Length: 175
Image 1: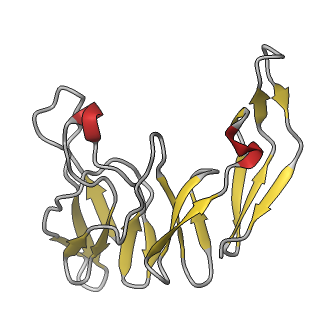
Image 2: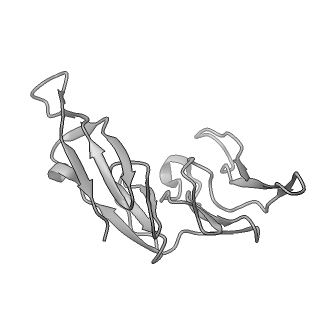
């Protein structure tokens, strides 16, 4: 078991909230502190892939937080080694790493963005539904093996002030 933490900081902080971790050895019932990372602990999207734990979030805190450090990363808790995400894409504004693909499953945290294929250490972009022409929120998502299943949500196209509920289902199969 691995426990993650960081200092809570706001936008005025002078230091980034670097990820810290400790691993529990069940046989000895003792915690072992792991080395601090140079990765900012920003989210809670860790996925176990073999002996590694992967947080697929992209970015570096940029102008908003002035940290200039990666947000996502990889931890090998047995060896106590942190590493950067492999081959990150050049994300545009508001694009994030939103999932991890393993040989058997997809782990998705949002209905769009980039997914790290951990079997090949490359990134796959989830295609935009509606081509980005319509604002949609509240889609339910689930993994179906490696596939991403999206259902419903509400569209806000400016014609109806309260939005319109959607009853469509989408299934995306990664390459």
